[in-house]
Image (cartoon, rainbow, N blue to C red; front, side, top):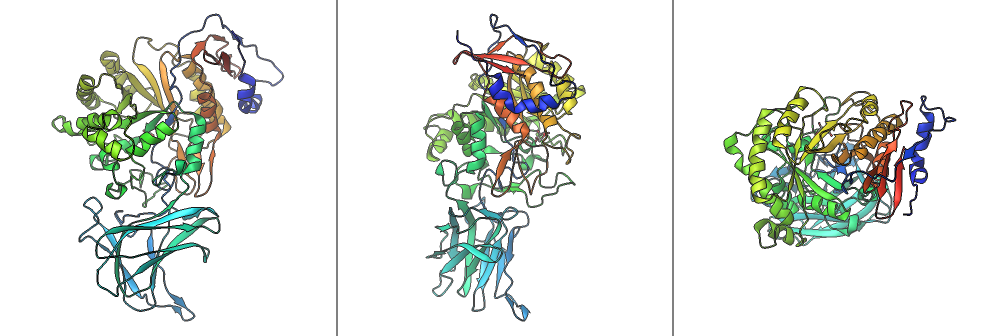
Length: 588
Ligand code: AHR
């Protein structure tokens, strides 16, 4: 057998930090022995994946590159993001020549009941603008699709055009217009070209003629999205994910699945189909933290379940949707659906399997096909509840499991072990799971770097006959869990890398692992650390992200015994064999 030792080239990125570790003098060589004659357990092909949640403006204002904030006027404060352009003359600010109003009569559709009416009542034109997500970012030389549903009062002589200008520091850097309106709602669009790069521009809209014009779903969207799709994702961010070659994509979270109350839980059915019909709701991270309130944080669901499945497929990751199990976040209202009300929740889970895998003749498979994907998305697993715990959770899980296993025994179910890696809720949940034996148990650790270092052997003694483990959310908290001062730094990244040697070495028990959260907008985050940071134009992976990437790109197929596993001097090891390429992969 030809073997290639990949440790030096692949892990060069980690070596400087190892050399800095005070307990490991650089001049002292470490001897690592690998027993290739006795390869151990197979490693799950989906071992290292991605946890995506719309936190830190990761979806709207991030991966979903709509540039207009509150395009549908459905935020609780319906003019959020929209302002009048005040006419200024040498004499000062002049009275406005028009007015904006939010109306609801004869709306675009029932799930999008509000729209904007701009009325010009004095000749000379009237303008208003959208602020974007902490500004609008455009790249020089790129095209952007400006579109809106528009209607006038149908009378001749009313407004004939809407002029759009992307303005940066007073300079127009892209412009275009919509025209041809009638008395009926209709979508209009034009492509505008950016002559300069700007990260904090605004979108100005002008109406020159007297009269009123109704507008909804006002959008400015890059033409150059990932794979060039019209409702596509931000290219640079998807590229980072694709380069990681993740084994799975967990979506849509996270606590966002639960909602702070059941009314605002994540309901996948409201996130598919025509984007103009997807019901905007508040984002649960909106004002969760006093240290980072974000009153303008809502979910448009432009990035919905179809797009999540498509993203997973694009980047070669197995989809792992997590569904609400009838419980709102236990850190918030803790609202719980009555057992007699669970049918709707269970039906959502059953229907999701149809949406992902069902034939195009099934109601939900038909919708998938209409949206452009007649082939199945090959859903193999699903989470029941996010970070739940307690008896109420177990009772509800039993109902889900009975229904799902009866109809879809092929779907593996993921359950939660509570919010922490130890303590009463964790122990209680494990007592239940040992008895009920779900397929996979999701453990979360938002712990200190020291915890990660001292837990690299955590799974060495886990029951080999029990449920598999999903290390579903973890990140070293360099200050304290949920502290806004946590940093993405080498200390945390190396601690995670050390811990991950233990996940990998126990590949017969641990089948999946994902760092969390994944993304953060540098101007609008709520939670740190995060794997990837971005602004309106740029993005970068942190050291923590590259640890994930190194592992995901070098999984191997089988564990190989290695010594020492941990030497007490800051050395942590794991070895795997890739039977397809005949490579030995050593991580140290
Ligand atoms: O990753 C951030 C949050 O941490 C997730 O939404 C939740 O599941 C956990 O508490």
